[in-house]
Image (cartoon, rainbow, N blue to C red; front, side, top):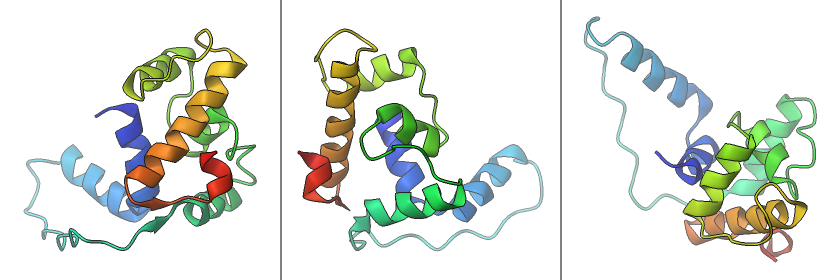
Length: 129
């Protein structure tokens, strides 16, 4: 799974559902678990900003996740180190500035917001520009 896929998953999949899935993976030889109800394939668009605001509130603020790729990744409990951001830049075809530079981090943040919107997330125009 790529970093953007992880970002999308952390925004669109309920934390309790993710925990349940992880627990099932950790005990593969245990008793059979009831299958989760499949999600509809035409789900309503996810209000990305609302989900992230809720996560930030629960985390005691969440930093400047609207404009900082590092803070966004930290809020989502995803590695925000340089290697992870290099990988994300490669996935999203972002070639602005040197790896780790402010220029690239800004471009990465904008690319993530745009990709979230492209994948069906509701993202305010101010975050995509």
